[in-house]
Length: 477
Image (tube, rainbow, N blue to C red; front, side, top):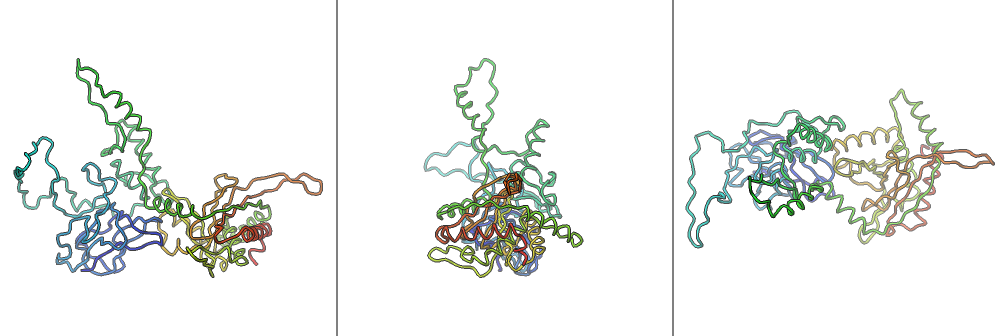
């Protein structure tokens, strides 16, 4: 029987989270049809079927972490022979999947799949006496369930999720499940109505303001458990100081790591091994801003709106033509000089950072770059970027100017050899021909990997980039 396996959806992916099944057991599926969603280190990606048939078995529950290449589901001809005796969440020969964050203390996940599995007790009730050593324990009586009755606590397959796709970040879905909230009841404030973690936090606060904690909320590790009421005449408990100390632990709340945050941490640790050095120049941007305003006004009838980031992408791409050494990567024991100039633009998300890539940026016009960067940013925030749209970068731009950051240094995005950090536009006084004037400036800092680049090469690139930004006609000719 054909198996649906966990695919490799990015160059840095080692495992993925099966965040949602869009099909249930018994559904007919066709080749290329989307049957589920996978949270990767980069974004939420679609899981496609590569075969026609019947979805006979879901092997992992929603929220499970699965390694690349491990089976997720079985597609057959509907005869029911594809599932074997495999229970949900365990594929043949596969390592057990990680329990989803919401399945704590025996409570079912709010996003549990509609997979029938026999419940096997793992421990005796607290009131049951333990048998003596060497004495076989009596078999627990089992009550026959009425024909057609579902096991206690089972979620009926008919309790289907909404047919309309609910836009939400993976972290928001996990937080909603942890607090027992239905995402469909939360108003999203992200792009396109996407639910982000702040929306979940607001919903939790609203529920607490009404006088009750959200249903199903699970205490976090380190959270104090309320003490039982003291009986009349009972001496104060000697454990009161310990309870007070434990109550102080509520000042910290454990935040589950998303796939994106895990990989970000790993890659930045790798980046820290590279010998970084930093060069900063001050760019006069009055001419650049006049050029941008003129372009946007002149081509407003074509709905062209060029941003400062678009100009930076084009300027960096054009400058990299003359400095191919900067458009290189470190490959362990050699340097790779890239023929194509693919400029990545860092985009901040709720769960971390992603770098969509403008490929062959030096061959594209300003209006093409403007359209592409806007579309890539929207898809990045919606979690719908394809693998090709965030892979293959050769140089990265990180712009924090919109947050009022005057100057900063960025960490190299491995294996690239350099990244440009762009600060805010500010105004400064200067003297020209004995007259005190003001001008707008922007500080840009190039971070370089010293294994690939020497100071002189990086300085020459930064000097030419400054010239191109201060004389913007150079970047369009």
